[in-house]
Length: 93
Image (cartoon, rainbow, N blue to C red):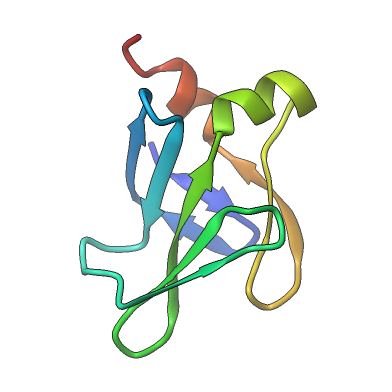
């Protein structure tokens, strides 16, 4: 299962439970640049400077506190991230 944020689908998703970070990208390619989002997540950009992923910081904590995880996209839309609960709850402790 992947994550969806607005019109963006991310199929390469990993969750580091010990750090409470979800890494989600459109493809397996490397990220060339990172930039913080307003919510203190991290936008990931490819070598052509196209938005291609995100590192969601503290998703388990945000789910427990807020009931969802939100992300402002580089284009300015503020969106709920779909698939976070499945990713976090499905991880081994």
